[in-house]
Length: 137
Image 1 (cartoon, helix red, strand yellow):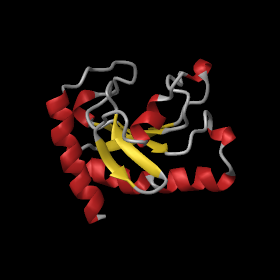
Image 2 (image 1 turned 90 degrees about the vertical axis):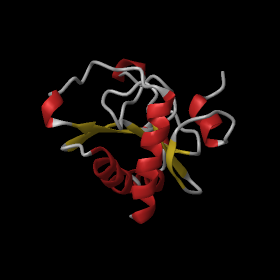
Image 3 (image 1 turned 45 degrees about the vertical axis):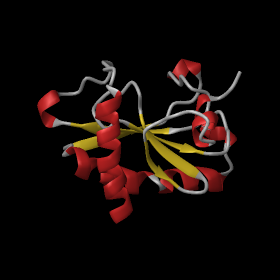
């Protein structure tokens, strides 16, 4: 079975990329919990965080603040959650380690379990906005 995230990282599948460097990418989640929900993904395939060497965990999480700041600026969110699931029992849907950055909005409460299906045009526009903020630091 092919790994969706490996395919996206290699440019073989489309995604709304908002950040990338030689070792990591960040994409908007296709089934977001909230508007701006983003996944930070190492390009190298490892199923769980415990499969990564310590330097890999450090490298993965070192990208989170930059991407989170850009999401907050682009979306106007009031806060955010960081999530990292490991294994099917922990609700890890794609078996490739990744970190969720989930913006939170005071006005919408905390719909942790509800998801929406995002329209590609909305994702495209939002990805452009966040990318601009990632570039500016």
